[in-house]
Image (cartoon, rainbow, N blue to C red):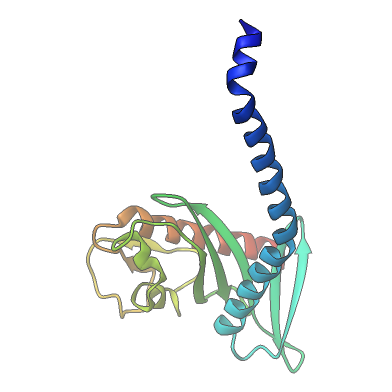
Length: 183
């Protein structure tokens, strides 16, 4: 019985081994490039969120990595990468705050696989701009309201409240983490 199984399935087993080795080789070859691209995307997002920062310094405190933006020896803001579960997948953000960690300077979406036409709206300026100037750490999502008002209320994306809630939760948690490590 085993002999018959091997006679009939040897090609499948050899093919699986060959393709597995091929995938592992491609992954090993491309991993450094993928990591470099992710670092470049993160750095570009931080520069966009803290445009007045002439220097960016990455630090790690209590196991938390964050970036300090400075200009002329003065801290102009902090940025941290944070992630959490969205509706469809993990949402990964860069969250930037002012030098006293009291107001949000902005958010950038590094990775998201939310529902096309609904949850993927988290990458639009309309949604992200609500965070600019909002008080850090006390944000809440509301279903209706004026998205142009800079306050602690974030107007949810119609049909994508889970994605809106997820982004706001991630931002609040990132701010709490930054407060803990920089103050």
